[in-house]
Length: 265
Ligand code: NAD
Image 1 (cartoon, protein in one colour):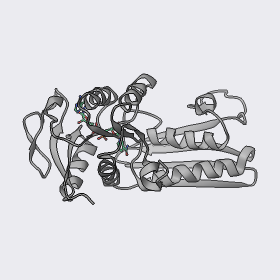
Image 2 (cartoon, protein in one colour):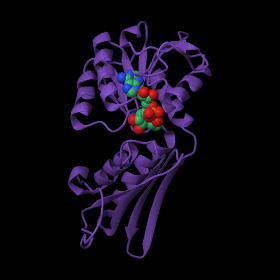
Image 3 (tube, rainbow, N blue to C red):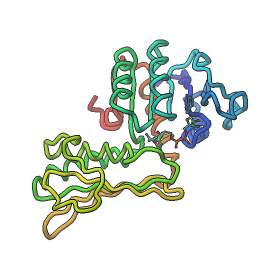
C-alpha cells in the first residue's frame, strides 16, 4: 500500500457532485485535492471552495502535479478535460453523462494515452444491478418484455439517465440485441401493439430525487422488478474517489467500474 497521498483535481467543483467530492475527499488521508476547477462564467472563480478552502479557478493549466482528474461537469467540458488530461499524461475519472457519440469517441481517443474510467454511475449497487439485469434478461429470454423506468431531480438536463442507458445495454446484451436497434424512447398516440424486440424507457423528473432505476421483466403470469434507489449522492462521490485511488498508476486504457469492483479487467 502506497503511503503517498493521491493528488486530485476536481472539475465541476462548484456543482452538486463537485461539492460532494470536496466533502468526501476531505475525510480521506489517502487523497489530497490540489485543484478545484469551475466554469469560466462561474461566480465561484477566485473564491474558496469546500472544507479545503481551495481557491477555485477555471484554468485547466492550474492542474499541475496531479495524479488524477475527477470530472463531473458537462459533456463539452468533459471533452476539453479529457484532451487536457491526455496532453498532460494525467489519469481521468469522469462521471459526466449525456455525451454524444462524438464526445464519447473523444474520450476513447484520450484513453489511448492515459488511464480513464467513464462511468454513468459510481454506486456499487447500480454496478451490481447491471450484472443482475443482464442475467435476468438472458434467463427470461424471449418470454419477457423489458421496460426501464428512471426518476431524477428536476434539474437533471439529460434523459434517459446515463444509468438507464447502461441498464438498457445490459438488458440488450442478455438478449444478444443492440440497444440502439430496439430502444423505444417514448410512446404517445396510436402506437400499435408492443413489438417483441423492444426495450422501453420511461422518465420522471421531480424535486430532489437523487436517482431511482427499475428494470421490469414482464412475462405472462409473472413480473420481475429489479430496483435501485439512491438516497444520498455521497455514494457517487465515494465511488469516484475510490476509482481515482484505484486508477492512479494504471497503464493507459479504458476501464470500467466492474474492473474495480469485480477485478475482471
Ligand atoms: P451540476 O450542474 O450541479 O454541476 C456541474 C458543474 O459543472 C456546474 O457547477 C457547472 O458550472 C460546471 N461546469 C460546466 N462547464 C464547466 C467547465 N468548462 N469547467 C469546469 N466546470 C464546468 O450537475 P451535477 O449534478 O453535479 O452533475 C454533473 C454531471 O455528473 C452530470 O452529467 C450528471 O448527470 C453526472 N452525474 C453522474 C453521476 C455518476 O455516478 N456517474 C452521479 C451524479 C451525477
